[in-house]
Amino acid sequence: METATAWNDQFDCISMVRRLAIHQPAMLSKKTVGKVVPFVAEHAKSLRSVLSRNAILCLDDLLFTCGPKLKTSGIAPAMDVLLECSAGNMPKVIRAATSTALQQATLTGPLVEVVQEAALKVSHKNKDVQEAAMAAVERGLKQMKVADFTDLDLKSLLPLLYDGCNCKSIAGKKSAKAACFTLVKSLGQESYEAE
Image (tube, rainbow, N blue to C red; front, side):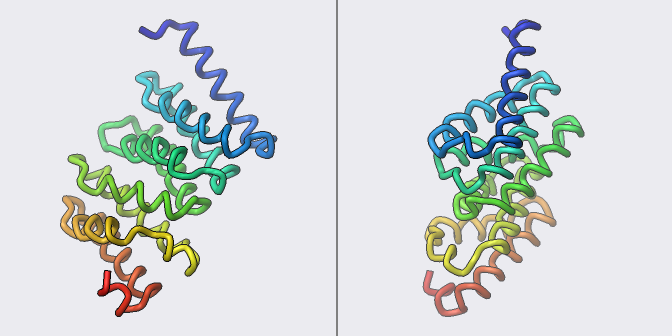
């Protein structure tokens, strides 16, 4: 059980990571960021909304300054917790911070990993999570460079986009369709149909 001292210390630790990410991002190597992000993501699940919000803001800062340093090992826990925190049953301040962090993830990347991880949440039981996942996939695909599309695992992504076209949320369906159109436009009709 968390004590008052323990969560205050956790809050301070995450605040220090935020300061490092904002003011000294060069000090955070790929290896360090890969270890820090799962730690911060774990605290974003805290029942204390102040700690949770601070951890989400820290993820936002880390994605902004160190996004390209993250690969699947670091981005997976971050995307998982950010999408889970976008559910409608979460406090409004948490959802707002999560929305900003998800937008940051789809701007700074690593875009291939962000898109792949977000697409995995399309079958989530909560329609808000499905909607946020499909919106992240759509934004991520629109931000990708042409060369990035070759790194996508289309064999696993396309069935998930198909599921997104049938999700509970109308906005999620629109985002899934827009993501498919982006893939067709970027890959070409023949390449898209071949997959």
